[in-house]
Structures are given as structure tokens and as C-alpha cells.
Length: 205
Image: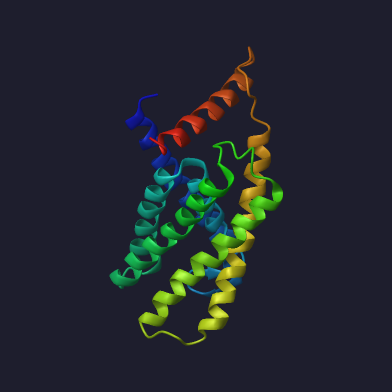
């Protein structure tokens, strides 16, 4: 697969996964909302972390595109500054955690070298970084009402969503074969592994 096409599908896949997770979250966990965009369980946070762990900078770009679409069309259609800030900060936090994992754990695309403990640490790191960046911005804007409660609510929602998605996808990736097979299904799963490896390796060039 050509490099440009691979980047395109990595970014497009990230956008689609984020939008799908948001739709599921709103359908299932809408009643857990603290304020607009902050839930006790927020599945898109798991997609944010996973997409950057799997496809690096392409994940960041995909999240930024998805964040801008959602913020401008759904969350904050009449507040462009809030929409842009939310999209940028929501994309930056998981990318920073990805860079941390890259340096500390010699990250692999299939996440094979991320133990359950490391996954938990990355989920916690992201769940601190995301609300921290957002609430620093809120404070700079003079919006400090219920800021401590809001911070911990976002932390809990991000952590819950990240853990659900991380361990689920980690389990699925562990089932992907390392060698091609005559079976069409197994061969297709092997191609998924190869595509993930290629997408990840492109981030290092």
C-alpha cells in the first residue's frame, strides 16, 4: 500500500472510529452527563488514546479533524473559539501520551509489548493530561466555576472510556495471526496486522 494511501486510510479510520464511538456513547451513556461533553464514561477517549498508539501522528490528525467536525456541528456550533480549543486539546493530550509510550516502551503497532500494567499507566496518564489541558484553558478563560468537580468528572469519564477500549482492542489484536494462512478469514486478519505495522512504521520515517 502506498504511503499516501496508507496515511489517508489511517486518518479516515480514526475519524470514523471517533464518530462511531461518540454515537454509541451518546446512545448508551447520555444519562451520565455532568455538563455538555463530560460524561462518567466517555468511550471516545479510548478511541483518542488507541488511535494515537496505533497510528501515531495520523491518529492525531484524524482526531483533530473529527474533533473540529463534532465541536462545530454538534457541541459548540455558536462558539468557534471553544470548538477549536476543544478539538486541539482533545487531540494533543493522547498524542503526548503516545510520544511518552514511544520513548519509554519502544511501542509496537500491535501493542504486544504493552502489558496490562503499562496499558493502565497510559490510560491514567491520558486521563490526567486531557482534563488538565482543558481545565487550564478554562481557567485562562476565567471559567473556574465547579472547576475541581469538573476536572475529576472528566478524569473519571476519560479513564473509564480509555480502559474499556484499550483492553478490548488489546485482546482483539492479540488474536491477530503473525503469519499468513490459507484461510481467507485468517489471511484477512494477518493483513490487518501488516497494515497496522506499516501505518505505525510510517510515523518513524
